[in-house]
Amino acid sequence: ASVSEPAQKCCTENIQPFLTSILEELMGPVSSGFTEVRALFDKEVNEIIQDFQKTNDMTRLKENMDQLMTLPFNSVKMEPCYLKVNLLQELLQDLKSRFKVYHIDFVIQRTQNFMQELMENAVYTFEQLFSPSHQADSAKVATTIEKVKLRVLK
Image (cartoon, rainbow, N blue to C red; front, side, top):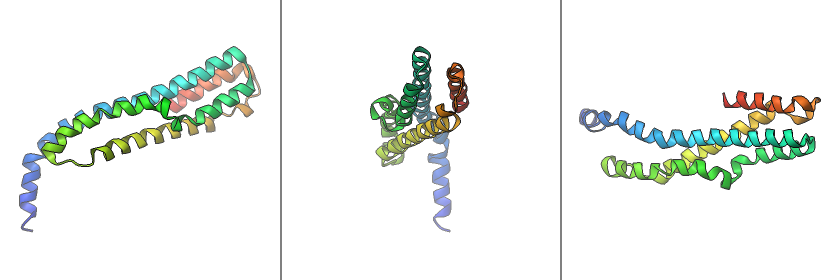
């Protein structure tokens, strides 16, 4: 009881007024990282569509789909997404001194983990909605892939 009032006053005066601006600052890199994940998924699926339109090869389509499923674990392709979030390092340094925010690397790592999880969910959902083995008419495959991609991105 004796600590509650001073703690509440300290939070109200020294932390609460800054929360909105802090969250806005932090959301910039986080949002751009997740936007990059979305763009990477879109780009990879577009490449599958283009390759299939050129080759019309169902075996190659299956190989490309298998490759897409490994995308969340492909550190080279995911790196641009992760780099967007690394901007948090600079933003959190200021918070570290002002508000004693520690474990900056943990915040960045967790955000990157969420990005990887989002990509895992996207490729899994894509795989579930589109199965090349169920596509009898190869003329409609590219259109179906595009529709599934848009559905996943939605």
